[in-house]
Length: 345
Image 1 (cartoon, rainbow, N blue to C red):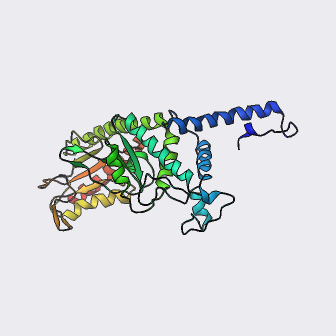
Image 2: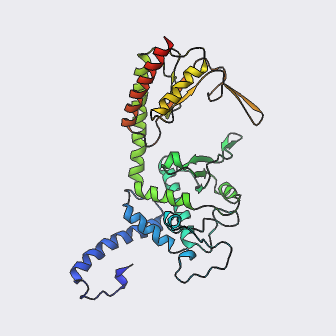
Image 3: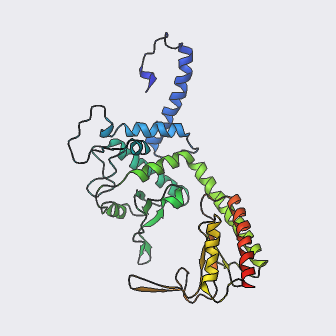
């Protein structure tokens, strides 16, 4: 409700009190106006209440939320469960039409605006972290890879939204330096797409703001150094080494040679021991594992190369990790290592 266009009688509330409230409302309206006009990521994150207000206003532009709606089509965004409707803020039409993710949705001006605004904020984010020549990008409701590079040039680069933007699994960002190539991918989508991922990403980006996201990147880089340094200390004290991978600033690997015995099962047990104690994501890779997928044989499956000489454990410093998690990991890892060492002896 915009009180600026309503004459509120003084009998309801004194005018001087009302003006204080109107000043706060105008500040929010300016934020909404600036976001929609400039389509840039706000420097500082918005409050949950402000984000919800924007989302509800966008949802009100979809035909299924009109007070006078009469739907006679097959797809009218009817939602049987109120919990589901509430979870999606009454968005139900999805995005795109006729297999084109970038096409406007006639019944859903709000959903179209939501999707396009989300894509604009992602593009602003991508350009802001160093890819200034990126021509465009869009969010797709799938976690699949696509064509990456041809004849030495990069046509598209694809990023998972859960890993890079800390939202639930389900979406991916497709970006390109060539806008016409981007439209080729967008127009090849089969049918209408879910708008849930756009909603998740929009709310997350508005919550973080540019400074919040940059802070996450900085913390991740610092925690990688913290994890690497502590992993090296752990390895040196036990006669192991951290495998050097100079171009990988996210994942690390420590050899497991001193606690490995001939049976593969005994060393892979380390992974399950860590998992049972609350450590997820750490993975044990052992030599000699072979797997066939679609007729293709992979030797030393799970490793980065064939002819793996020694088993190792991989860990990662991903976006959102904390030093507290790293400290807890080493406490649990040390206890598991001690137990396996005793079993070997």
